[in-house]
Image (cartoon, rainbow over all chains, first blue to last red; front, side, top):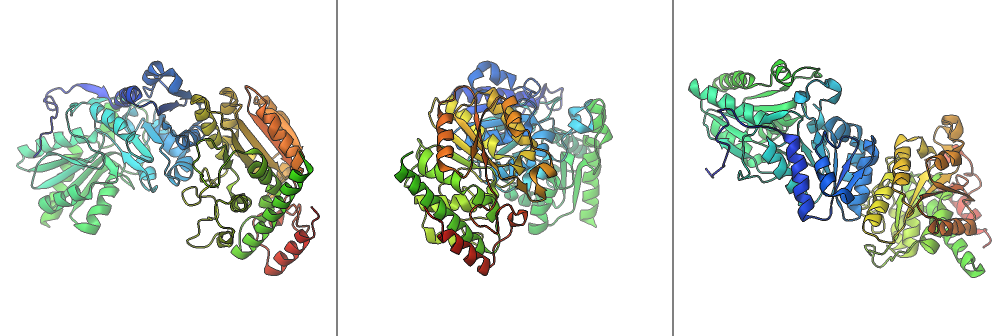
Length: 326
Length: 276
């Protein structure tokens, strides 16, 4: 296995940083090196951390006010004129409210618009269901020409943001609000479209995106204590999905668990199922939000309530193993 | 405007109208009413006002044109073919499988189209984005955007109106095809649109009202736009839906219906008698 340079503190009090900070810092880094990068905000600059870019490059920050549909199509116009616009707001707004603008104006014409889709998942917390994006992966990955990335932690969000500027065409980067464990380092390999095996294993595969990669690593540790060898794959890019790595894992482990902080219907797990069911069908279990809206609450409690902790993954792994053995 | 120039523009707009009738009839579907109502506007844009080069559709110095009411693309396809962007024969492939002339504009297929449009309400935002980029890069290019009057029901138009005024996009010219009809009837019966000029003015726009079939007035209005500073301009062009084909004029039923071969023949006969 190649060197992954993962954090040494994953299982011993990892550093906690919100993924949105990675987006904000990634934009500042891009701003330094790429004059074509412009950032659009819809009255949520500090929440999305794009105030960092605004302060560094005020001439390249465009405030649209609370007008997400206009912002998305305005970005299309900027892209048509050679800019690399990053549309920045909450996932429910940029992928939901402005879905038609993303689909028809941006994606149909393969315009070079990047979407910083914040507040993904129930861990948004106290704002409740209205502001917790739980359908964004489903509704963006079905649009042709769109790349969809859900990075696992701060460093990966930063890398995904920087990488998005080098991809020709629309890219959605999904990140969250609250502090989440930092599991990678600035040296950890990251390539859009390439899933990384973070832990090898032979009995079952756990593949995840976003902060569920951390939960999957914890689950694998627990499973190891019970004598189950679990492979953990960080599948940060949901589209285009790394079929090769997933099919190989199915072949070599014979059972797969997916984990996402998102609806299981049409989301990341479904994307994995689309690949495996047609290439190498194996028993599968999907961890995620089960066709329900979120609610207000403490982020930790909400993760627990919706079955998004490592314990659920462990349970799902045993179920998948049982199905495998028949 | 010189008489010779005016005569030339009239002949072009007539050719565009004839092409619209032929194309939509051959396709067996499409939107003749709203295409005919913008024929004169498109003529003035492509043959009088806009800087563009049919031999180099990516020329950096070109002015940009966005058809927000994408369903009226037959008028624009005809103008592009007439300009020389692609062979006129291709017009008759409109809406057919494999054609570059999609039912609504696809910028990736056809040279001369600046954006893919058709989902209403989005064009003015796209045009504002281009105009904003031109401002950021200190480029002199101008941006024109034709909107339908029914399309102004879309909230995004007014989001864009606020944005364009906020950023003082005086290089942006919106043109409203004020033909007074939309699919379900008269625009003001469907949802009250008036007082339309006041609406735009209160949003911070320079407003010019013209007869949208008077080529000289259209040309003058677009020249006045050039000399307006710190505000975007909207030209409210009063038009007749189906203009030029008497049985289509002001008829709501001709929004999205193709003429039969007999009707097309009658329409072309009528247009051929127009005196230039």
